[in-house]
Image (cartoon, rainbow, N blue to C red; front, side, top):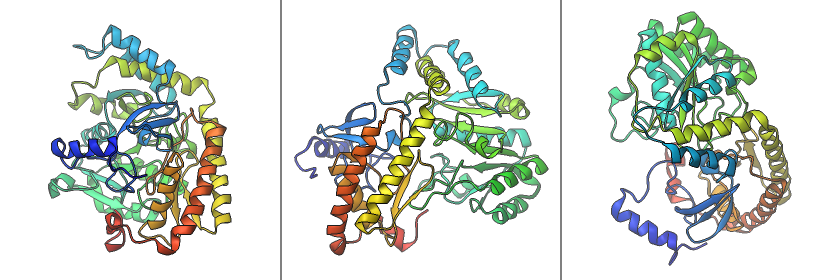
Length: 426
């Protein structure tokens, strides 16, 4: 799928002149195959169209925000109605109270809610509230876990200072001994333990949370007076209608939410238990657009669909069908193909593929067949997907495995991913 003389190529060239690097952040295609489009025209349901008019079944769901389908008519109608009444005002509307009530009713550990715009806002607010509550500084979190792009947690620290990352101790996810050692190192200065709902680091296999690890994190926080924070920005509402760790019977003190809580409209949240209410009220956090009413209207509609439909059961079943079908086709083509993580948030990797040359070839072949998959980041299923969409993805995969089999003997290393074998992923 060459980009020369295409609208995408033209926009990339123009962007280079006016945007540093041409594109930045997690939606940059800099570490994707060269044929991946950078710019898109529109989305509808489970599909997106690039600026050259090509249509794809989107297994990325905008990196998570699409839960009930792009341009969902019910959710977007609520957004547009409120936009006509008022959005960014001198103060919030009543929708802020209604939404806080709805989220507190939905999430079992939560007694209060605060709203912001991005996942990074929510996790930084959680860290600040934990330090205010405990009057301590040190945070324990897992190596390789992504908690946002603020200086304290950004995975690429260019332009940040060592002091931005001060008072942090890293442990190995799901390793109880490593967690205990980190907490012991923090001593009486432990403010909080940050936990991802499952191990969803990039470039490596995902892993479900070990209940023993989760329970031990809860016990250590209870023993030391620190707060347990579950960062549900990425996984929230795709694993449970509650906080994701509710599935294993562990309740945090704080949880962070974002991406899909308003089905793609800009909104994130921090939820907390009563014990942290006073601290949360004492910190100064704000933003000019944090209190916009239209995204809150969209969020209320989204949560209504969460409560009233079988969306979670349907996307889980679709994810299991995709997983079993891919396993069958990979085996038939002679590939050892690893699928890790929840069925609703899958990651695909190949054995004996340290520099992802097989993954790049397979993903490009899927793209050519109308399916937008990702070679090294977890993907997402949404409730707008159908059984026919999954069958179309499996048909595409059958062709993609065949293409990979033809090209495998001559595949070359991927220069842009040389860091994977030079020094390892994050």
